[in-house]
Length: 305
Image (cartoon, rainbow, N blue to C red; front, side, top):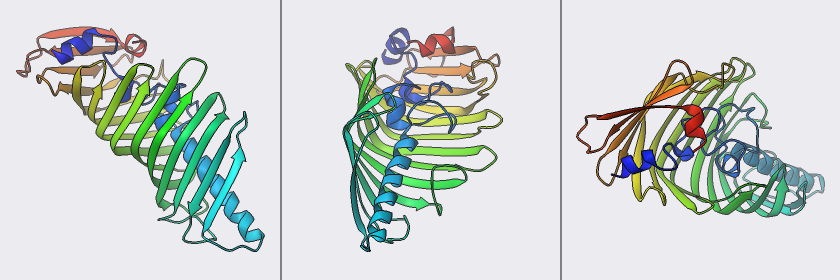
C-alpha cells in the first residue's frame, strides 16, 4: 500500500505538506524555505520567498526612481545589480504608473549565480502584482498579493540544493501589533531536492498568527506526487494545526491532517497531541475507512526523516 510504505519509509511526513510549525512548508533554514518562504512568522529565520519578492519590488522601485530623477518618465524599467556575495540580479518591469507600483504591474527577476546571505541563487522569477498597499516596503503594516512563476529557480547552501518550477500566488498582510496572515496557492509546483522530486498540485496553504504572542494556526490541502512515494497522495487539514512559537519547541498542540493515497485509497491520519511533543499516526491500510493501526511518534522524529 502506498500510504503504508510511505509511513514506514524515509518520509512519513513530507515537509512539502507542512505540518511542522517550526520548519515551514519545505524546511526552515534550507533552500526550499527560500523557494516557498512559508514561514510560521514573518520574522522567521532564513531567506524567504517573501524576502525575494520584497527585494525585487525594491530594485524595480529604485530603477523607476532613477529613471524619473534622470528626466526619463517611462513605464518600462530594467536594472542589473550585484549581489552581496557575488553574481547579479537583473530586475525588469512594465509599470502602469511611473510614480508608484500598482496592480497589474509585471516584474521579472533573473538570478545569475547570485549569492544572498548563505544561498547561491540562479534562475528566473516572474511576478504580477494583483494588489499592493501604498508605500509597500515589506515592513508592517502592509498588504500584498502577487502571482509568481518560477522557471528553473535553484538555491543551494553548504548542505543542500533545490530547484523549483511552477506557479504560486502569495497574499500576505501584517499589521503593527504583530498580526500576520499568509495564503499560498497554486496549480503546480515542482521541487527537486537532491534525487527526490516532489510536485504539489491544486495546493493551498493558509497561515494566521501573531509575531508578538507566538500564536499561530495552519491549514493545508492539495495533492503531492513524489518519486519516493511511487504514486500521489491527497492531503487535507481536517482540524487546523495550532500552537505557540514561544512554548516548548513551538510544535502544534492541536490539529489533524488526513492523507489519502490516490493509488489504493489507503489513508494516514496525523493528530497533534496537547503536549506539543507527540503526534498520533493512524493507518488505514485497505482504504475501508477503518484505521487498523495506531503509532505514536514525535515531531522531532518526523522532522528528522
